[in-house]
Image (cartoon, rainbow, N blue to C red; front, side):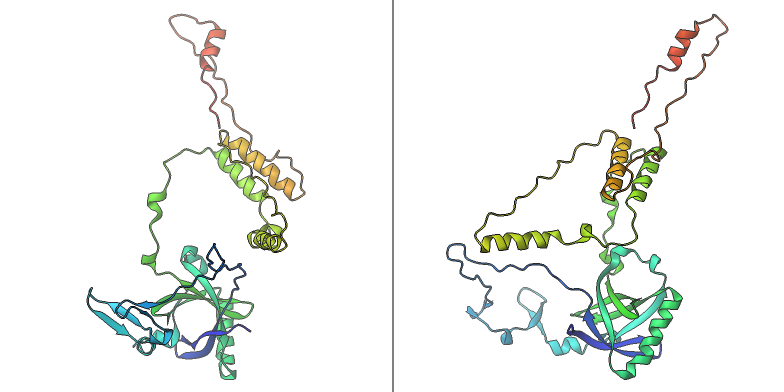
Length: 305
């Protein structure tokens, strides 16, 4: 059972739902310590007081805000817990909105909200049912770890999930990252849609979505432990410069279908359109041979995709 991170209540109008907050995710990454390479002695970070020039214990360490170079305002954990905020003890629901109205870039880590005791069971289930039937999510404010935050509440398998959210002014404007203007043909756009269709699936189950980095790292550690040769790394294909976008799209569709055991025929890809030859124009002054006129009309080279 995961440990409780925070205890409080969900405030839904005049309805209060006592809850415990637990992490909704697990980190399976392999962790490393720092060691002295010469003798493999453990390297540790020690905390020193600059004034007394000595190492201090955690019990002697507190928080402070540096007002000026010479003045520090100490702030205790008790003072942080007793901040005059309604969100210090509760997750205050401020509004209900459609999920699609929230930019995913603002949505962060997820936490499960557990009903705290039997008294919370009925109001907890009420909020679950209301969120499920409305097809909306709740936007709330709460205060954790020394700051007030914005959060999103949704339902997953009859459990309320709280996602931390970033404030609007925490999102950088991406305008400066836009590439230079380019022109795309409808055939190229249709080709990209065909590639997306060939890569569409109903779930994210499969070896493509497994953590191969951690598995490879575990094999390296095991090989070194047993004093065996390290696993060989296959050289990845060097990315080439895309000269023909349509050809690259067609080849990508074929590879996507082949990897899924489907027919790799790409006949459904849009065909490149070629310009029709224009009929020769007649002039009133003198006649021009049909062959020369036709050559002039079709002299423009077809545009490469």
